[in-house]
Image (tube, rainbow, N blue to C red):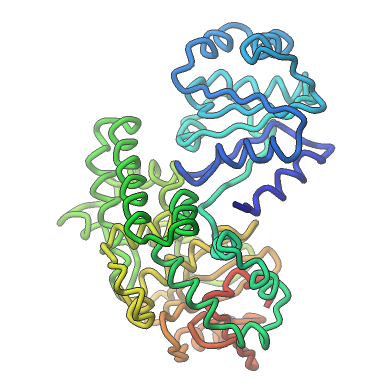
Length: 432
C-alpha cells in the first residue's frame, strides 16, 4: 500500500537539519506500518521498540537521560549494534513512557546522528498535557487515513492519479465514470488502511463494515481507558452526536443536539480530547477573508467532522445497497458525507488552513474557506451536479478572491470568476 507520507519521511532522512520525528495521528491510521515500511525501504536495519506495557524500557528511561547510556541499553534490548548511519530507531506508543519523549531533546542536542521516529495512538494528548520536552527539538508529521488519491493507488489505478496530477481535465472527463465509481466506494470504505486493504483484496462490503465497527469500538474503549473519568460520558455523547450534527442543513455544531440545555463550557474539554486524539477535525468559522485567515477566527462557531468518511458512513448506518444508486449516495444525509469527504481531503494537503465562512447575519455561508499562505480560496460543496452558487457569488462580490471553487459531481469547467472542480479532483485545489 502506497502512502504519500513516505516521500516526506525520505526528505526528512536526507535533511541536514533533521531532528527526531514525531508522527501524530488517530489510532489505526497506519503509523506503525508506515514507520516499519520506511525502515525497510530506506535503512539497512530497523530497531523497533514498543513502549506499551514495557517495564524494561520504563526502567531504562527512568534514570538519567544520557544518550550514550540510552543507546547502550537499546542495543542490549535489541540484541545488536545500532549504527547511527544505517539504523532507524522506532519508538512506538512512546507516550506510555513520557521520559522517552523527554529524551528526544537530548538526542537532538547531543546525538543528532541517530535517526529516530516516534508514534503513539494517544500521543496528541500526551503532548497537550505538557510532557516535558521543548518544542523546537523535534519535527512533526501528521498522518491521516488514506486520501482519495491514495485509495485510487491502493486499488491499482495509479494512471488515473497521474492524470489528475497532470490536470488534463479533458482526458479526466472522458474517464469520469471510473473516478465517480471509485468515489462511491471511498464514501463507504473510507481511508482506514485495514478497511481499504480488505476492500481491495476481497471487495466484500460486509467485511469492511465489520472492520469499521471494530475500529469504532476500539475508539470507545479508548474513551473509557484513557480519558479522565468525569469527561468520559461527555466524550461519548459528543462523539455520537456528530452524525446528526452533520445531517443538518446548517452544519454548525449545536451543543443542544448533544442533549437539551447542554452548554459549551461543559463540553470544551471533551472536544479538545477528541481533537488531540486525531478523532475529530474542528473547522472554525471566519468572518472576513484576509491573510492569514487565522486572524479572523470566531472560536465560538465551528463544525466538527470525524477522522474518516468510511467511519462516518458506518456510524450513520449507510447501507451498501445505496452504493448501487450513486445519486442517492451523494445526497444521503443532506450532503453530510460529501462535506466530510471534502474536509478530509483538504486536511491532507500540507500547510493548508481550513475554515468556513458565514456573514454576521448568517444569510451567506461558504462551506470551506482555505488559506494557502498566498491566497484565500472559498469552496462551495454540492452533493450532486447542482450548479447554483448563491453564497459563493455573494462572497465573491464582497471579497473579490482571485479564484472561487465550486466542487460538485459536474465536470471541470473554468468560468470568469469560478472554477467547477469535480469532487474527485478536490485535492488539486491549490493548483487551480
